[in-house]
Length: 453
Image 1 (cartoon, helix red, strand yellow):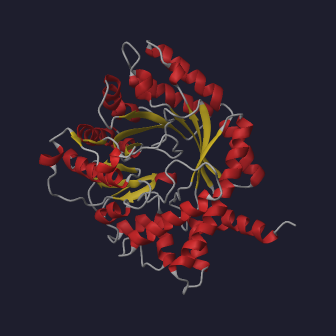
Image 2: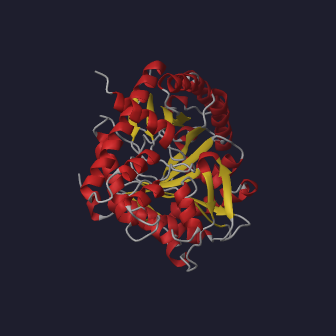
Image 3: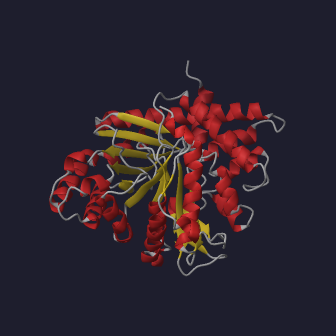
């Protein structure tokens, strides 16, 4: 017999608490697009994306209507472009970027990721050329996203690349300062980057991935908050964790259903479910709101890191029971600009930069969508990145930095993008110099556990 209470609960999750499929991302290998001529590479890339992704948006919309479950974003993730472009005699990475952008626009997706390089142990000629081209590529495209892996628990931290990327982030923000530095908002640097992440700006198709696959990112902070709110206020931590696991199971089951149906319609393999709780600026769809429902006055209060650790763990434990293939980032996101509660806490000064860094030790993915004064030195940004890479390296987890130097703006101002990217107050950063440290260069060695084999 059909359990009508379960049907009504799912309807309420969607209608009242912002449950959605945050993204369906087509991961596509471009390794067969390698050629010596950039024009040939661009033609192959465009044609392959058209061939595989032409029905992605249409079929996703059909499923959303059929199951009455919103699918917010449709995206594409491709092989790191540094691998594809460096085969050319005279690589033109900006031209390749514009080809990716046009292909994304023509198939109707929201973003395309994979303008990427993996440089945790050092850079090839192609890596260097791609990195240098990032500011212009992001300034001259609309849908393109870029990511660079700077560190890993096996290789350590490439400090030369950390310093270089701090300069690239500043340049990307500067070239798009008329749009509140949107270039930097589409650029993220990683430690331990996964190759099956469906979320932007870090999505790309890893070198061990199949020819194509459909990866799904679920959401549901509003659903989790509603469940915690409804729990007896005297419930202990174990009961609280169990309730979150129960809700995570239901959220993931929804994503698994939609993902497998869509993969079948597209006639491609189903990849992974990413269990991340991805907030939005919408009221009630906030990870910070979950902390308040747990009993904290606001995000940033003492106890926030412990609350986030429990939330992250419970989401993973509940979600993994609903899917045999969990991957990507799989945790709770804490992007300042994309979470209404985080925006409020940062604006009021109760959520500080240092507290956010502490929280990244237990969450996915890291310092995300944080706006800082535009005159912040590149060396200071390099120090911020190095700290975050160290957290990931030592803890054997994915961490990242997506930071936006807001040119012409200072603490007290804000940037605004609208939509899922939201808005963010300019947060103060430590004024002490990092220059002597970050300019030493070289590679911070991997920790002793990197020898596990």
